[in-house]
Image (cartoon, rainbow, N blue to C red):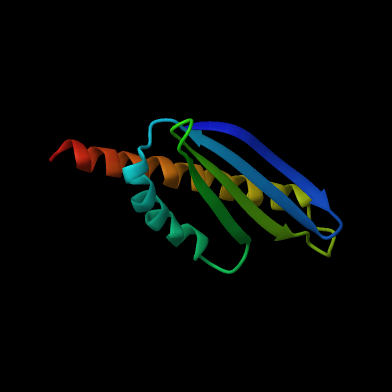
Amino acid sequence: MMIDKIEIKQHEVALYGELKLLDGEMSKDDFNEMLSRLVSWKLGPVMPTRHFEMVYNQEKKETLVDVYVTVPLPESSESHADSFRYVFNKLIEFGNLYEREFEDISGFKGKD
């Protein structure tokens, strides 16, 4: 797995975070299993709004993952840095989950 991009932007009333991952180690056979394991992250608590898109590029034999997190900015004088950290941590949380699940899948297959 390689992190291709991490970006956090502020738009009017929210912070939008994006994480792009490339994985040249995952096989097409493992793709569906990995996708089903990652759905739990997407279905987590309602806040922050978060989702991911995962596609297997058959030609390059690599998995492309786009992760998105949106958090409303606080209306009071609270620090925007806390919201920024929160978005960043959610993106990293996904990366850690991805890595853990991939190790589990590849480790499981190696024991057959």
